[in-house]
Image (cartoon, rainbow, N blue to C red; front, side, top):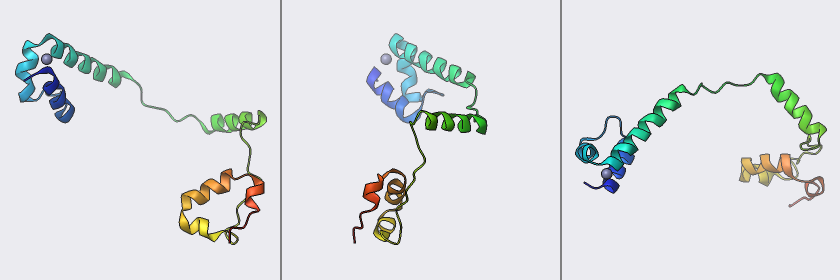
Length: 113
Ligand SMILES: [Zn+2]
């Protein structure tokens, strides 16, 4: 087995435990042994990373207020009327959501029918 084949076996089967097919090569190959050691160290360090913590809602409220104050975001002051453009909603709900949030007001006045 060659280093490239070891990499393929590890990619398919993982390295813990090391697949039997790769074990013999890795035992005699400094490069593959170092690679396995690096993987094991990465996994070990990853376990030390604390779980992601959801920030309190006041953080989001504060952030939104700040972004609105800096005019980076704004509340939409217009809505696509489903009665005037029902094809959007029936064609693709995600497109409807996008247009509801993102279309400039002058485009909302356009009736495609
Ligand atoms: Zn090797």
